[in-house]
Length: 287
Figure 1 (cartoon, rainbow, N blue to C red):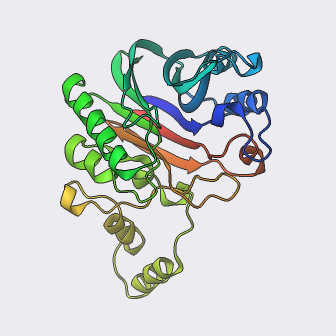
Figure 2 (cartoon, helix red, strand yellow):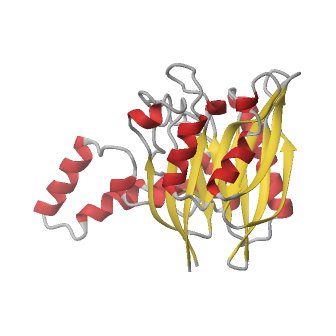
C-alpha cells in the first residue's frame, strides 16, 4: 500500500492576492514544507517575456521541490502564457493537454498525465473550468469522454483543480458515470474544513441519549454520498475562495481507487498572502 500526499492549488500566477505582489519565493517554501507527492496547480505562468522572475514557474517549482513536471499551456498572449501543471515525485510516463475552451474569452485546457506509482498507472487530470455554467457542463462532458476513451476501467484516477462550481452541480456526473468521489466526502468529518452545524450536533446528541446505536456515525453516513446516482448526497466541499475570507466552494479533488485518510483546507494569514485561493491537501492510500 502506497501513502500519498496530494495538493491542489490555484497559485494566481505567483502573485499575492492581497497586494498583488510577487509571492513565488514564499510559495516555494510553503509547498516544500507540505512534502507533496502530487501537486495539481492552476494559473501557472509558463512564459513571461516582460518579467523574467515570473517566467517558467512550473520549472522553478519543480526544481525547488525535486519533482517531475508536466505543463499544459492554455491562455496565450503576445508575451505571456499560463495554464495548468502537475508536479510529481513519481515518474510521469506521458502527458497531453487537451483544449476545452468554450469560447474566445476563456482559454481553458485539460492536462492529462499518467504517473507510475509503485508499478501502477495512475491517471491525473488538472483542470481549471470556465466561469459560465453551460461552458462548465460542456467541459465536464469532454473530460468524461476522454476518461471513458483512454482510461482502462478500474485504473486509479485523480482529478483536481479549480472547478468554479460554487453550486456543486457537477459532482453527480462524476459519481454516476465514472465512480469518482470528492475526497472531503470520505474524509473524517473533523478534517473537512467545515464546522458542523449546531442542529446536526444536537440531533446526534439526542440520538445518543435515546440509545440509538452508532448515532454519531449514522448522520454522517446519511449525509455522505451513496453508491448510486439517485442516492448521491455528499457533504459539501470546503470553502476556498477568496483565501482571505473564504465563502465560495470552487476547488475540488476527486478520486477513484484510493482510500482517503484525511482532507483539509490550508487556511490562515500566511496562505492568504500567497494566492486568492486556499489550497487543498489530502492524504490517500493506493492499495
